[in-house]
View (cartoon, rainbow, N blue to C red):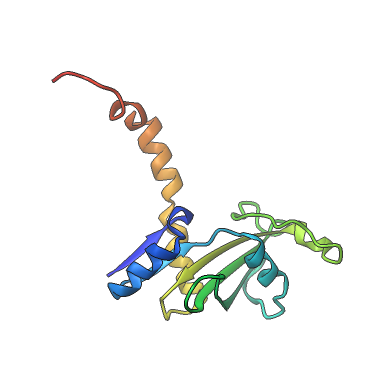
Length: 148
């Protein structure tokens, strides 16, 4: 049994609770400055398809008790029209960063990085939520008061 969650659940207390319950988790990482610096330092990208590379690292935020495994996907927008993820602010010596979009996850899974990404990417949660809200009117129906 496991948990896949978006960046709203990238919280120390939540992650520690999942670990207490011995649940496997994959949570989207907020690409804050310390994580960005870690990504900038990567030299060991493994290309898995044209314009798609993966890497992993261990990271410990200040105030956390231990390092945790993180997976990063880099997509080259010049080769992948529908590249997902965030662009990072370029450094003075890294002009080519504008061609890439990055996504990252923290995980307790022992699966290879590509497999972790595959578990998350096809879920297409954002489109499902949009469809429920717009096509099925769930965005407004359950939020309005009504008398039975």
